[in-house]
Structures are given as structure tokens and as C-alpha cells.
Image (cartoon, rainbow, N blue to C red; front, side):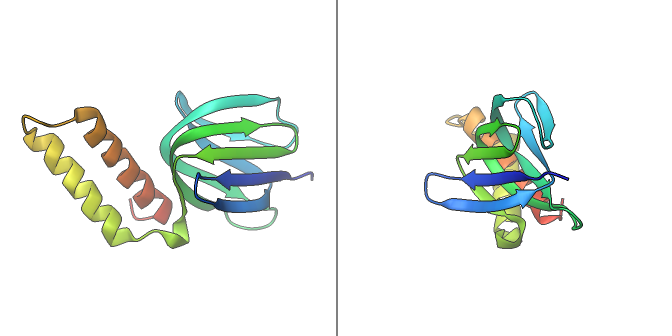
Length: 134
């Protein structure tokens, strides 16, 4: 079976470059899947979990916090604001970030930037889901 070349790139570094049999990513209108021979596509991403599998192995995950995905017949490139492999995620730090964001949204101080607090919550949830604890 043909494979996809998957690249996940942030402004700081190349996070991942590997072959994958399939890729699932958090598009702004819902999760989307990409298989080899996919039609050309460019779409924005929201905070969530990118899942990819290699032939004959279990799916692997990474958390992204927005960006863009470009897919083609044999390649998927994700240009992400941030990206972390599941194995690199500090679960305790992600839990603390989630709790802070939930507290701010619950208490709603006068100077609260709601969109920023909600984005922080979505990033923390994506990290926890990618790590497999949420």
C-alpha cells in the first residue's frame, strides 16, 4: 500500500517527519482524514489531536494548537502554531493549565479575555487527549 509523507512543522522546528498510512487532523469544521491518493486540499486547523498510523503499527498522536494542513496524493504537511508529540507532553502541566483556564472561565473576572481563556482551555484539552489521559 502506498504511504504518505507526513511533516509537522512549527515556527521553531520540524516536530515530525515520517511515513504514514493515514492521518486524521482537527479541521475547523471537524476532524478530517487523509489517505494516500487524497485530492489536493488546504484547510485551517483548530486545537486538537493529530493521529497518524504507520503500516502495521498502532496509531500515534500529537497535539496541535491551530495552523494549516496541506494534503496531496502522497504528502501531508501540517504548519502548526504549536505541536507536541504525545510522549513529550508534561501531563501535570497540561492539567494545571486546564484547571486555570476553567477557573477563569467560571469566575469571569472583569478583565477576562474570554476568547483567550477558551483557546487556552482547548490547547490544554488537546494536550491531555494526545497524552491519552482525557
